[in-house]
Image 1 (cartoon, rainbow, N blue to C red):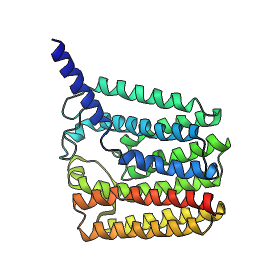
Image 2: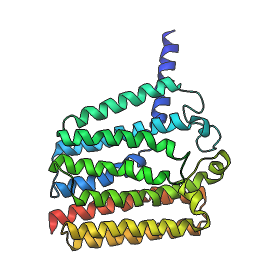
Image 3: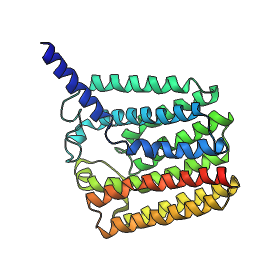
Image 4: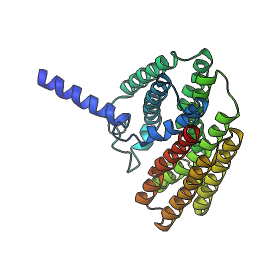
Length: 295
Protein backbone atom coordinates (compact mmCIF):
# COMPACT_ATOMS: atom_id res chain seq x y z
CA UNK A 1 0.00 0.00 0.00
CA UNK A 2 2.82 2.42 0.87
CA UNK A 3 4.44 1.68 -2.46
CA UNK A 4 1.16 2.43 -4.22
CA UNK A 5 0.79 5.70 -2.31
CA UNK A 6 4.33 6.71 -3.26
CA UNK A 7 3.57 5.91 -6.90
CA UNK A 8 0.38 7.97 -6.82
CA UNK A 9 2.15 10.88 -5.12
CA UNK A 10 5.01 10.69 -7.59
CA UNK A 11 2.69 10.66 -10.58
CA UNK A 12 0.80 13.68 -9.21
CA UNK A 13 4.02 15.61 -8.65
CA UNK A 14 5.12 14.79 -12.17
CA UNK A 15 1.76 15.96 -13.49
CA UNK A 16 2.04 19.22 -11.51
CA UNK A 17 5.56 19.73 -12.88
CA UNK A 18 4.14 19.28 -16.40
CA UNK A 19 1.25 21.62 -15.57
CA UNK A 20 3.57 24.48 -14.62
CA UNK A 21 6.01 23.66 -17.49
CA UNK A 22 8.81 23.11 -14.99
CA UNK A 23 11.06 21.68 -17.70
CA UNK A 24 10.26 24.51 -20.14
CA UNK A 25 11.40 27.73 -18.50
CA UNK A 26 11.79 29.86 -21.62
CA UNK A 27 8.39 31.38 -20.80
CA UNK A 28 9.69 32.47 -17.40
CA UNK A 29 12.74 34.01 -19.04
CA UNK A 30 10.57 35.97 -21.48
CA UNK A 31 8.51 37.20 -18.53
CA UNK A 32 11.42 38.17 -16.32
CA UNK A 33 13.54 39.94 -18.94
CA UNK A 34 11.46 43.13 -19.37
CA UNK A 35 11.06 43.20 -15.60
CA UNK A 36 14.85 43.16 -15.25
CA UNK A 37 15.23 45.86 -17.93
CA UNK A 38 13.10 48.10 -15.76
CA UNK A 39 14.62 47.00 -12.45
CA UNK A 40 18.20 47.68 -13.55
CA UNK A 41 17.26 51.04 -15.02
CA UNK A 42 15.36 52.12 -11.91
CA UNK A 43 18.32 51.02 -9.75
CA UNK A 44 21.00 52.76 -11.81
CA UNK A 45 22.38 49.44 -12.99
CA UNK A 46 22.85 47.86 -9.55
CA UNK A 47 19.59 46.58 -8.04
CA UNK A 48 19.46 45.31 -4.46
CA UNK A 49 19.56 41.54 -4.02
CA UNK A 50 16.14 41.71 -2.35
CA UNK A 51 14.56 43.11 -5.51
CA UNK A 52 16.32 40.57 -7.72
CA UNK A 53 15.06 37.68 -5.60
CA UNK A 54 11.50 39.02 -5.44
CA UNK A 55 11.13 39.66 -9.15
CA UNK A 56 12.99 36.62 -10.47
CA UNK A 57 11.26 34.19 -8.12
CA UNK A 58 7.99 36.08 -8.53
CA UNK A 59 8.24 35.76 -12.31
CA UNK A 60 8.68 32.00 -11.98
CA UNK A 61 5.66 31.72 -9.69
CA UNK A 62 3.42 33.95 -11.80
CA UNK A 63 4.37 32.32 -15.07
CA UNK A 64 3.66 28.94 -13.46
CA UNK A 65 0.29 30.22 -12.20
CA UNK A 66 -0.43 31.57 -15.67
CA UNK A 67 0.22 28.14 -17.19
CA UNK A 68 -2.21 26.60 -14.71
CA UNK A 69 -5.05 29.04 -15.37
CA UNK A 70 -4.42 28.74 -19.11
CA UNK A 71 -4.71 24.94 -18.97
CA UNK A 72 -7.85 25.12 -16.86
CA UNK A 73 -9.47 27.41 -19.41
CA UNK A 74 -8.20 25.45 -22.43
CA UNK A 75 -8.54 21.86 -21.21
CA UNK A 76 -11.23 20.97 -23.76
CA UNK A 77 -9.42 22.67 -26.64
CA UNK A 78 -6.12 21.04 -25.61
CA UNK A 79 -7.61 17.57 -26.15
CA UNK A 80 -8.18 18.48 -29.81
CA UNK A 81 -4.72 19.91 -30.53
CA UNK A 82 -1.84 17.56 -31.31
CA UNK A 83 0.80 19.55 -29.40
CA UNK A 84 -1.26 19.96 -26.22
CA UNK A 85 -3.33 16.80 -25.88
CA UNK A 86 -0.89 15.28 -23.36
CA UNK A 87 -1.15 18.20 -20.91
CA UNK A 88 -2.18 16.99 -17.43
CA UNK A 89 -5.73 18.38 -17.50
CA UNK A 90 -6.33 17.35 -21.09
CA UNK A 91 -5.28 13.73 -20.52
CA UNK A 92 -6.86 13.39 -17.08
CA UNK A 93 -3.74 13.11 -14.92
CA UNK A 94 -4.99 16.06 -12.84
CA UNK A 95 -8.49 17.23 -12.00
CA UNK A 96 -9.67 20.81 -12.29
CA UNK A 97 -9.89 21.00 -8.49
CA UNK A 98 -6.27 19.93 -8.13
CA UNK A 99 -5.19 22.50 -10.72
CA UNK A 100 -7.13 25.25 -8.93
CA UNK A 101 -5.37 24.33 -5.69
CA UNK A 102 -1.98 24.60 -7.44
CA UNK A 103 -2.97 28.00 -8.85
CA UNK A 104 -4.02 29.29 -5.42
CA UNK A 105 -0.78 28.13 -3.79
CA UNK A 106 1.38 29.70 -6.51
CA UNK A 107 -0.56 32.97 -6.36
CA UNK A 108 -0.31 33.15 -2.57
CA UNK A 109 3.44 32.52 -2.69
CA UNK A 110 3.85 35.26 -5.30
CA UNK A 111 1.73 37.64 -3.23
CA UNK A 112 3.81 36.84 -0.14
CA UNK A 113 6.87 38.05 -2.06
CA UNK A 114 5.09 41.23 -3.12
CA UNK A 115 4.19 41.95 0.52
CA UNK A 116 7.91 42.63 1.13
CA UNK A 117 7.66 45.64 -1.21
CA UNK A 118 6.06 49.06 -0.80
CA UNK A 119 2.30 49.61 -0.65
CA UNK A 120 2.11 51.06 -4.17
CA UNK A 121 3.70 47.95 -5.68
CA UNK A 122 1.37 45.73 -3.65
CA UNK A 123 -1.59 47.58 -5.16
CA UNK A 124 -0.14 47.18 -8.66
CA UNK A 125 0.18 43.42 -8.12
CA UNK A 126 -3.62 43.10 -8.17
CA UNK A 127 -3.52 44.15 -11.84
CA UNK A 128 -0.94 41.44 -12.52
CA UNK A 129 -3.28 38.75 -11.17
CA UNK A 130 -6.20 40.12 -13.21
CA UNK A 131 -4.17 40.17 -16.43
CA UNK A 132 -2.91 36.62 -15.88
CA UNK A 133 -6.46 35.42 -15.21
CA UNK A 134 -8.09 37.18 -18.17
CA UNK A 135 -5.51 36.29 -20.83
CA UNK A 136 -6.62 32.65 -21.42
CA UNK A 137 -10.19 33.80 -22.11
CA UNK A 138 -9.26 36.41 -24.71
CA UNK A 139 -8.49 33.86 -27.43
CA UNK A 140 -12.18 32.93 -27.46
CA UNK A 141 -13.40 36.42 -28.34
CA UNK A 142 -10.48 38.23 -29.98
CA UNK A 143 -7.78 37.56 -32.56
CA UNK A 144 -5.33 39.48 -30.34
CA UNK A 145 -4.65 37.41 -27.22
CA UNK A 146 -0.97 38.13 -27.85
CA UNK A 147 -1.61 41.77 -26.90
CA UNK A 148 -3.02 40.70 -23.54
CA UNK A 149 -0.08 38.34 -23.07
CA UNK A 150 2.23 41.31 -23.63
CA UNK A 151 0.32 43.32 -21.04
CA UNK A 152 0.53 40.47 -18.53
CA UNK A 153 4.24 39.88 -19.19
CA UNK A 154 5.05 43.61 -19.29
CA UNK A 155 3.33 44.56 -16.04
CA UNK A 156 6.32 43.30 -14.08
CA UNK A 157 8.34 46.18 -15.55
CA UNK A 158 5.86 48.68 -14.09
CA UNK A 159 5.95 46.91 -10.72
CA UNK A 160 9.76 46.75 -10.64
CA UNK A 161 10.06 50.48 -11.26
CA UNK A 162 7.43 51.20 -8.61
CA UNK A 163 9.23 48.97 -6.10
CA UNK A 164 12.46 50.96 -6.45
CA UNK A 165 11.12 54.46 -7.12
CA UNK A 166 7.74 54.38 -5.37
CA UNK A 167 6.11 55.81 -8.49
CA UNK A 168 5.50 55.08 -12.19
CA UNK A 169 7.32 57.22 -14.75
CA UNK A 170 7.74 57.23 -18.52
CA UNK A 171 10.60 54.66 -18.78
CA UNK A 172 8.63 51.67 -17.41
CA UNK A 173 5.65 52.64 -19.56
CA UNK A 174 7.90 52.60 -22.62
CA UNK A 175 9.17 49.15 -21.60
CA UNK A 176 5.56 48.07 -21.08
CA UNK A 177 4.68 49.22 -24.62
CA UNK A 178 7.80 47.60 -26.07
CA UNK A 179 6.94 44.33 -24.40
CA UNK A 180 3.41 44.31 -25.81
CA UNK A 181 4.83 44.54 -29.32
CA UNK A 182 7.53 42.01 -28.49
CA UNK A 183 4.92 39.53 -27.29
CA UNK A 184 2.87 40.05 -30.43
CA UNK A 185 5.99 39.24 -32.46
CA UNK A 186 7.23 36.14 -30.67
CA UNK A 187 3.86 34.70 -29.69
CA UNK A 188 2.55 35.08 -33.23
CA UNK A 189 5.43 32.86 -34.32
CA UNK A 190 4.56 30.46 -31.52
CA UNK A 191 0.93 30.40 -32.67
CA UNK A 192 2.06 29.30 -36.14
CA UNK A 193 2.75 25.87 -34.64
CA UNK A 194 -0.94 25.32 -33.90
CA UNK A 195 -2.60 27.39 -36.60
CA UNK A 196 -4.37 24.49 -38.37
CA UNK A 197 -5.69 23.00 -35.13
CA UNK A 198 -6.66 26.44 -33.80
CA UNK A 199 -8.74 27.18 -36.90
CA UNK A 200 -10.41 23.79 -36.60
CA UNK A 201 -11.37 24.14 -32.92
CA UNK A 202 -12.20 27.86 -33.05
CA UNK A 203 -9.30 29.37 -31.09
CA UNK A 204 -8.25 32.84 -32.29
CA UNK A 205 -4.73 34.26 -32.64
CA UNK A 206 -2.77 36.96 -34.45
CA UNK A 207 -1.23 34.22 -36.62
CA UNK A 208 -4.72 33.49 -37.98
CA UNK A 209 -5.70 37.17 -38.21
CA UNK A 210 -2.62 38.26 -40.19
CA UNK A 211 -2.86 35.29 -42.56
CA UNK A 212 -0.58 35.64 -45.57
CA UNK A 213 0.81 38.92 -44.14
CA UNK A 214 1.99 37.28 -40.93
CA UNK A 215 5.72 37.76 -41.49
CA UNK A 216 5.34 41.41 -42.41
CA UNK A 217 3.17 41.87 -39.32
CA UNK A 218 5.76 40.23 -37.08
CA UNK A 219 8.53 42.38 -38.57
CA UNK A 220 6.38 45.50 -38.09
CA UNK A 221 5.82 44.50 -34.45
CA UNK A 222 9.57 44.39 -33.94
CA UNK A 223 9.95 47.81 -35.58
CA UNK A 224 7.45 49.33 -33.15
CA UNK A 225 9.04 47.48 -30.23
CA UNK A 226 12.44 48.94 -30.98
CA UNK A 227 10.97 52.39 -31.58
CA UNK A 228 9.84 52.23 -27.95
CA UNK A 229 13.31 51.05 -26.88
CA UNK A 230 15.14 53.77 -28.81
CA UNK A 231 12.79 56.31 -27.25
CA UNK A 232 13.55 54.76 -23.86
CA UNK A 233 17.25 55.35 -24.44
CA UNK A 234 16.60 59.01 -25.24
CA UNK A 235 14.31 59.57 -22.24
CA UNK A 236 16.67 57.80 -19.82
CA UNK A 237 19.75 59.46 -21.36
CA UNK A 238 21.49 56.17 -22.07
CA UNK A 239 24.67 56.03 -24.13
CA UNK A 240 26.28 54.29 -27.08
CA UNK A 241 26.65 50.91 -25.40
CA UNK A 242 22.88 50.77 -25.06
CA UNK A 243 22.15 51.95 -28.59
CA UNK A 244 24.72 49.61 -30.10
CA UNK A 245 23.32 46.64 -28.20
CA UNK A 246 19.69 47.24 -29.07
CA UNK A 247 20.59 47.84 -32.72
CA UNK A 248 22.21 44.41 -32.83
CA UNK A 249 19.13 42.99 -31.07
CA UNK A 250 16.89 44.63 -33.68
CA UNK A 251 18.86 43.14 -36.55
CA UNK A 252 18.75 39.74 -34.83
CA UNK A 253 14.97 40.05 -34.55
CA UNK A 254 14.58 40.71 -38.26
CA UNK A 255 16.89 37.77 -39.02
CA UNK A 256 14.66 35.53 -36.88
CA UNK A 257 11.59 36.53 -38.91
CA UNK A 258 13.44 35.98 -42.19
CA UNK A 259 14.59 32.51 -41.11
CA UNK A 260 11.08 31.42 -40.04
CA UNK A 261 9.70 32.70 -43.35
CA UNK A 262 12.37 30.87 -45.36
CA UNK A 263 11.44 27.65 -43.57
CA UNK A 264 7.81 28.14 -44.57
CA UNK A 265 6.63 28.68 -41.01
CA UNK A 266 7.01 24.99 -40.14
CA UNK A 267 6.33 24.07 -36.50
CA UNK A 268 10.04 23.47 -35.93
CA UNK A 269 11.04 26.81 -37.47
CA UNK A 270 8.24 28.66 -35.65
CA UNK A 271 9.34 27.29 -32.27
CA UNK A 272 12.98 28.11 -33.02
CA UNK A 273 11.95 31.65 -33.94
CA UNK A 274 9.94 31.97 -30.74
CA UNK A 275 12.72 30.55 -28.56
CA UNK A 276 15.45 32.73 -30.05
CA UNK A 277 13.67 35.78 -28.65
CA UNK A 278 15.26 34.79 -25.35
CA UNK A 279 18.58 35.90 -26.87
CA UNK A 280 17.03 39.13 -28.13
CA UNK A 281 15.77 39.98 -24.65
CA UNK A 282 19.03 38.95 -22.99
CA UNK A 283 21.00 41.18 -25.36
CA UNK A 284 18.77 44.13 -24.49
CA UNK A 285 19.33 43.47 -20.78
CA UNK A 286 23.09 43.22 -21.31
CA UNK A 287 23.02 46.53 -23.19
CA UNK A 288 21.21 48.25 -20.32
CA UNK A 289 23.49 46.79 -17.63
CA UNK A 290 26.65 47.57 -19.59
CA UNK A 291 25.65 51.13 -20.37
CA UNK A 292 24.64 51.94 -16.80
CA UNK A 293 27.77 50.42 -15.28
CA UNK A 294 30.47 51.13 -17.87
CA UNK A 295 29.57 54.41 -19.53
